[in-house]
Structures are given as C-alpha cells and as structure tokens.
Image (tube, rainbow, N blue to C red; front, side):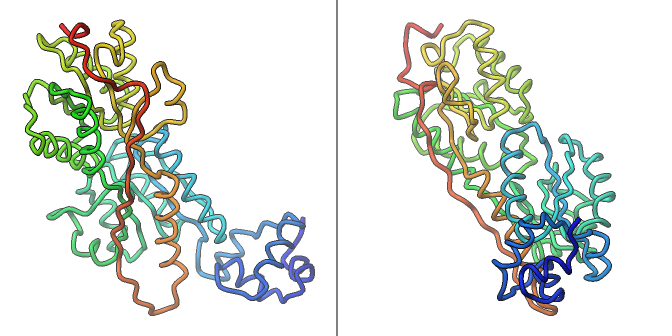
Length: 346
C-alpha cells in the first residue's frame, strides 16, 4: 500500500503539504496531489489523521427514512462534497423514531466533527445537547421553531437548508384548479415537522386564495410513509362525494395512494387526478406518469455539506454567522393530472 511519503514524492511536494491537502486546507499543488493520490490509490489512515489534526475527518448524517428516495439523493449530495474535502460519512437511519435518533446522536457524536441531520421532531433534546456541546450542525428539511429545546443556541450556530415547501403546495393547487378541479383533497405529512406543516399550510392558503371550497372531509393528516398514503387515499375514495383531485405531500405517500387506486381499479386521472411532492426516478415510467412538485434533492444535500465544511475548515476564531437557505421547487406536469371527468366520479 502507498504511504504519504510516496504521494509527496509523486506530487513533487512535502509530506506537510500533503497533510494540509487532506486537512481540507488550500494548497498550491492541489491538482498534482489529487493526481498522485489517484495514481497510487492512496487512502490516509483515519487514526493517524485524527491523532495529528485533532479531527475525526468524518461527518455524521442522520435521516429519518433511508428508504425514501429523497433522503438517498440527499446523502448522495452530501457525500460528493464531503469526500472531495477528505471527510468520510457516518450514516444513521432513525426510522422516524425519536428514541432511535437520540441513540444515534449519542453513538455518533464522539466519532464525527460535525453533523447533518433531519430531526424526527424539532423539539429534540438529543440534538440540542449535541449543539450545546459546541459541535457544528446543519439541519436539512427542518427548521428551528420557537420554544424548542436549545432554540437560542441553535439559532446562533445551526445552518438550515430547506426548500420552499409552501410555494410547492401552492403550485400543486394552482395546477389542479387551472384544470378545473374544485373538490381537491390533501394527504399531508405530520404537522410537527417543517415539511408537513409548511406544505399543509401552503395548500390551505392557496385554496383560500383561489376561493375554492375546503371541507374537513378532504383533509387527511398522515405520516410520510407508503402505508399512510394508502390508508388515507382509501378514506378519500370511500367518501360519499369523492374528490376529483388529490395533492399528496411526499413521494412515499404518493406511491401508497397510487397503489390503492390501482387495487380499487380507479382510473388515474380519469376518476382522480394525483400530484405528489418530490420526484421519483421512475415517476415518468408509471402508468400514467406522475405529476410532481420537484425539488433539487442532491443540491440540497450538497449545500448542507458545504455549509458544514465551511465551519469545519474555518480558521481558529473565525466568526461565521448561521445561514437559513430555501431552495426553489418546480412543477413537473405529467399524465396523472387532467381536467375533471364528471362521468368518472360518483
């Protein structure tokens, strides 16, 4: 196996320069070192690096559901930035369980230099404790709300990378209303999470702005899981007056909702138009292809990683104010939405 001395000789630099390169610092011979590392297939010893620099050269990433394609894409974006700066990832899946998340934070915190996390709930004592300990953290897909544990410390130190959830929900309603739908239902996620709450509010606000009727029967609060979407859609289609269109507030619930409609042999969009939030790689291949509100998932992860690395690689004493970034979303129209069909409803 190659060692750091061989990398230095191949790049024509000192071993100290190579060490600076792997510490993520700026060096003049960056490209030459990168070429030598690739040529020699060199991997620095994590133990040696941590002893020498006082860093773990690792970033913790905790997501609530790794089976969700959105979080898989998010991690891809994080990894692309982290590896380019010499940091490895330690990944944890909380499975939407606050107790599991607390255990993961405790287990990972001593092995990483900072953490990127999408908390299960925003009032999370374990996450607040990690932040209070002075470790850098970035929230993705979650915001800091008033009254939560450690709110003051978090607002002073935690970066957040969100998307415009409310605008996305409004785009969905505007699209369906533009097709002529008035009986529009919503399957929302948990209202104690930023995306669940913001998308739900965006939906209701746009319905009100357009003067569309909003019955409590057409509102379902679910769990961002596939089975939650299935159950909620079953309740909606069993109503005496079935909605002609449904906005489903995340990708997994949309899959569940479409599965229910397929099981019941209810045509989409002939009887019910469906639009989801978050794109899927196979959405264009569905029959019909699914209309969605798309967000830049890989970019959201990469942005979170850049914000964290900025703190980890900062000079001692450098003050970095926290940022709250909101990335734009877009409407992608496919075959699952159309004008309402009077003959397709009961």
